[in-house]
Amino acid sequence: MNADLKGISLRIGATLFFAIMVLFIKMLADDIPVGQIVFYRSAIALIPLVAFLMIGGVFPSGLSTKRPLGHLIRCLCGCTAMFASFASLKYLPMADATIIGFLAPIFTVIMARLFLSEVVSGARWFGVVFGFIGMLVLIMPQLADLTFSSDYMLGVGLGLLMAFFTAIAKIQIRRLAQTEHAGAIAFYFALTCAVAGLLTLPLGWVNPSSDQLMLLVGSGLTGGVAHIMMTLSFQYSEASKLATFEYLMLGFAAVLDLVFFQIIPQWHFYLSSMFIILATLTVAFEGKRIFSKRKAASA
Image 1 (cartoon, helix red, strand yellow):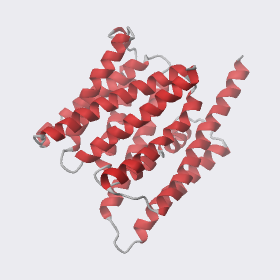
Image 2 (cartoon, rainbow, N blue to C red; image 1 turned 45 degrees about the vertical axis):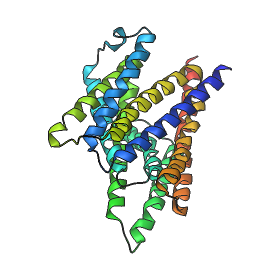
Image 3 (spheres, one colour; image 1 turned 90 degrees about the horizontal axis):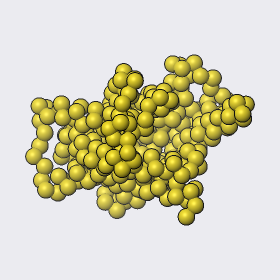
Image 4 (cartoon, helix red, strand yellow; image 1 turned 60 degrees about the vertical axis):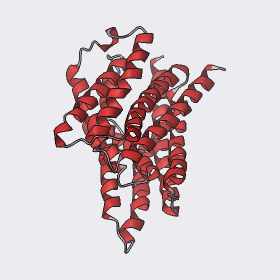
């Protein structure tokens, strides 16, 4: 198996494990508090993550940092995104929550322009516009429906909050990645989310049944394994080659919605997906083109 095929296989595997993690969380969302889910998802994920770092010979040496404040900002934004994401699953089908999550790169473009003074090309603004249209296509049938669902719109709001804070976290990760080990970034994020989830204990956790406990542990293990597989995939193949396979998450989510919750996506979901995927691909490949030009200029 050549390097590209290994990278693609690992990325597809990571996407599948992330989809299974979301399924477990969706099954828990109605009965288990969000903070409790965040704690188990993050604390259990530390087990495979630390094992991976130890095998790679970078634990604990790889956790040293010169930028603790940068890690704190990244962790707080990422943790907020995780809480919002898990909360949205109580109100949204998996597929809808997934497609809203794809708006994160669009928010990243806007914030990079506002806060980093980056020059945003016409192609990237095209991506922003199409992402916005895709969002409108998704929610307009709900707004026009006589049986308007406030719960659905709450889920959409939480999903947008997740995408917004994910975008901020990604910008911060870009900054950290220049000096920090990837293992440190992942470790401190999982640790912070575990602590944040634990702090919600006084708000009223529940005593999970054996089935619920298995789902909680499963969410942590699948999330941890998915993160490791995704990290490994970048060692074998270029990020631009792997980016498109992220959209398999949407297919996995739609299938799992159908099998486990008997939810069949409506026409507006497919149209919205087309707009948002086109938007994110435009942003991704425009970024690749700019990077290639800079690399050639510096050679």
